[in-house]
Image (cartoon, rainbow, N blue to C red; front, side, top):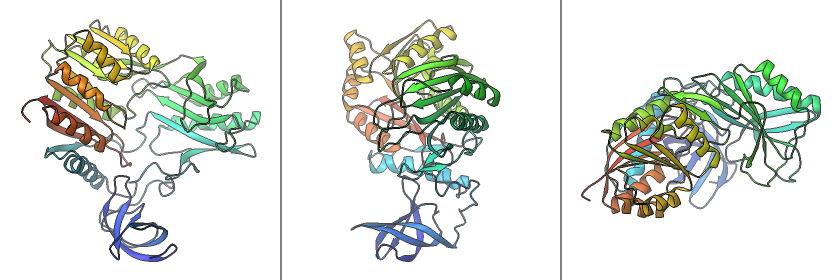
Length: 451
C-alpha cells in the first residue's frame, strides 16, 4: 500500500477520536466519517510503518448503523465525528469506550451503568469559541478542520444556540465597517483572534467576547450596538486581551465593555454567576443529570465535610451544600473562586469556603490544618489529577470520593492509582455530555476498603 492508492476497506471498529478502523493486508487503516460495518473505498493520504490514513472516497455498502448526516460541515469540521451514525450506536460506543479504558488501562473489572442519553443532540452547547480569518473585509468564522488550524467557515453550527449565529453576523458587520484585521499565527500580526460566546440556558442571558491581539477595540460602541440589536438576551460584552504568540485562546486580561461582568444560570434550583474564563459544563441539561448521579453516588447524610477539588465556580459543591455540614472548594482560577464565593452568597449558603490554589497545594494546606474530609469530589481537567494529589488525599483519609471525568483514559489511570492506595471503585456511570462528538463524561464512586 502506498500514498494515493485507492483501496476497498471494511470498517471494523472506531478509535477514541471517532475514526473508523479497518485492515488492509494486515495493516490498520484509519478513515474518518465511517461507521463499523461500512464497506468503503478509501483514498490513502499517509502510510507509515504500522498504519495508514485514508479519506472516504465512496461508500460501497453502508452499515446498518449509518445515518444521513444532518450537518453540511461534518466531514470537514474537526468538531463532530458522529453526525453520520445512529444515536443509539453512538451511545453504545461511548459506554464501551469507558468500559474498555477501565479494563485496558485501569486493569479493573467494574460494571459501567447504562449511559445517560441526551434529551437533545442539537443546539445544546452553552459556549463556543470561533477562530476567525478576515479576507478583503469579509469575516470567516467557524471551527478548525481535523488536526489542523485551517478554519472551516461555519456560522450555523448545529451544536450551538441560534443566538450565536446572530452574534457572528453582528461581528461580521463591524469587521467590514472598521476594516478589522484577523490575527495570523505565523506572523503574530493582526487584531481579532477569536469570537467567544456563553449562554445561560435557564435565564437566557448571553455574553459576547472579542479576543484581540492588542489593547483597544476600534469601533467598540458600534459593535456593542450591533450586538444589542441582533442578539436576544445579551447581558455582557467583554474584551479579552491576548498578545502572546500561543495557541491558548484566552489571555489573562478581561475588560467589560458593556453590561455585566458575568452572566447568571440556574442548575438544580441553585443560581450561578459565570465569568468569561470560569469552567462551567457546556451542556446544561446533561450537567443536571450528571450532578444528580453524583449526589446519588455520594449518598450524603448531613454531617459530612465535603472537599470539592477543581471546583470552578462552585457548582457541584454548592448543589450539595444543603446536605453536608461543611463545604470547602479549591480552584486555581482567581475569578472562578470569586464567582464561587458570590454563588454561595446568592444561594444563602453559609457553610462554604473557597480557596484559590491548585488542587495539590490546596489539599496540602487543608491537611496541615487538620482538615479530614468525609467526601472528596474530583472534577479535574482532561489531563486528570496530579499524582502527588493522591498522596495528600490518602493522608487525609476520606471515606468516599466522587470522580467526574471528561476523559475515560485518565479516569482509568487515576482509579488504578487510588486502587493501589486501598480505594475501591464501586460504581461508574457514563453521561453523554457531548452528543455528536467522541467525548463522554463519566462519574465514579470510590470508597475506602479492601484491595
